[in-house]
Amino acid sequence: MQYKEICFSAMEVVKTAAAYVRERHEKREELVIEEKGRQNFVTEVDKEAEHILVSGLSELLPEAGFIAEEGTSNRRGDRYNWVIDPVDGTTNFIHGVFPFAISVGLTENSEVVAGIVYEFGLDEFFYAWKGGGAWLNGKAIRVSVAPSVEQSLIATGFPYTNFKYLEQFMQSMDHFMKNSHGLRRLGSAATDIAYVACGRYDGFYEYGLSPWDIAAGILLVQEAGGAISDFAGHTDPLFGEHIICSNSNIFNEFQSVIRKIMLTP
Image 1 (cartoon, rainbow, N blue to C red):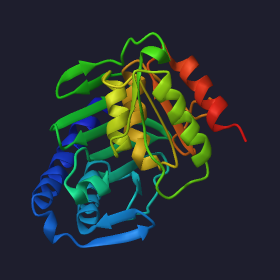
Image 2: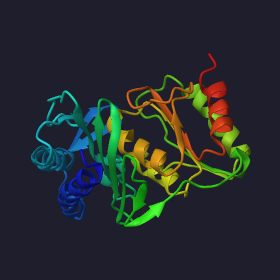
Image 3: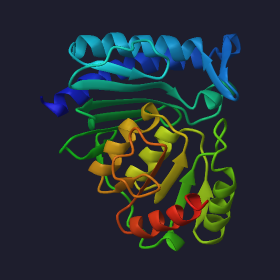
Image 4: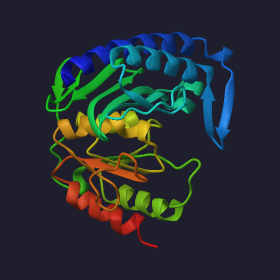
């Protein structure tokens, strides 16, 4: 498979979905909002954008299956699967707050080989393909060179349905507020991870995410020279319970701090 060609072709599908989402965002007062769970929202825009993505990507790679947030297609491929979040940051979208993003990753035998994150607020296409580096609107990107957590800007996401690690999470926020350049929370994990890939953030961690939130971002960070794991240090977090990513300089320190705080009973 030519990963670069697949990635660029998939970007065209994402552009079509993005045009629809942007048009509906301008008329968001007309939205019909459903609640999938406590503080977990979905709109007809999420569903229709996913339909556009599934339809276009099916034509691009007919043998591929899908892991899609809204369940437009539950067909699984033997070798290839698209992992899709049609609107990452739906709560932001509903309230007219940026960022929110489309995230599309392609897995081959569970390895992410192409990834796209389109963030609406700054009109930014982040994309990567296996062995091809990471890119933002046509320019190569790299993770930051911050040498320590103390000199890093850290991002996270607040839990909104899963409070399993809430006490530990509050401790982690206290630690990074006092021992880094600061802590940020945007409300879109796909965007957070893309910002690590391009060096705006030095590290990111969150628990309770799903594969569609992180698939594209995993490859972006890897191809941009960064490192990824779960809280325990396992290097394949796609279907796990939590994720850490950062530049390679701070990764061991960052992962060690989070493991100690977040996984302590």
